[in-house]
View (spheres, rainbow, N blue to C red):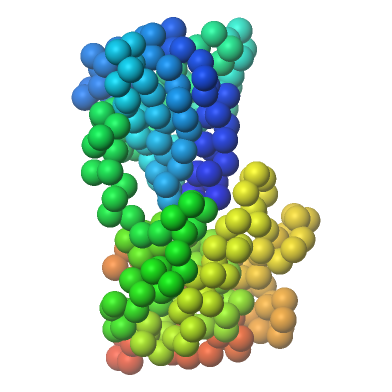
Length: 277
């Protein structure tokens, strides 16, 4: 699933529509098939965690929000009016927004909604502080994580109700840099505020670029400490990086057994160690 910086970058791509009046909108999902946004003005393109919010104004001046979620396979592309659409098969298109200077095409989007601006909160108010938003609050994020001390820290970091925008990449990299085993209980983790502050800094450092790096190097194969490096030696100690499924949703955790010591699973249970990436 895309990380918050990828969603933030996508919102910046959609900035090309801001200030323009839509000539036509095509919605290729049943519940929005009859929606007509022609003549509406694109006021703002924003992100909230992993959610995209395209804010519109209709001819009467009323505000609306076009909400979408990328999940694993969604994408927005913006083309010139006379440019050939490329990058994804046409059958994946879910929405097309046409304006004088740009055409935005949404592929395989999820949770696609068009709601009055006053109801935007019903879609995103459940989220915790946004790592890349004006509402970012490390103390509040740490407080929310700490409310469930029995939870494994990796799962707590991925819960968007605690902090919005972190995904598997930044979860794995943050825990490595803090020396925390992914299966450690929240109650056993010191300085939760420092941990979430580090996560925020990692995401913020990659705003404006698609090549995500946490090591300081943008060279291919050198961008990450542990993420997608199972079977390779740790860059710090040389121990082989491992990966394993974790949590109810069986998300993959990557870690160095030496730099992040601790049990990889509750006693009496086993978890598969998967093949190297």
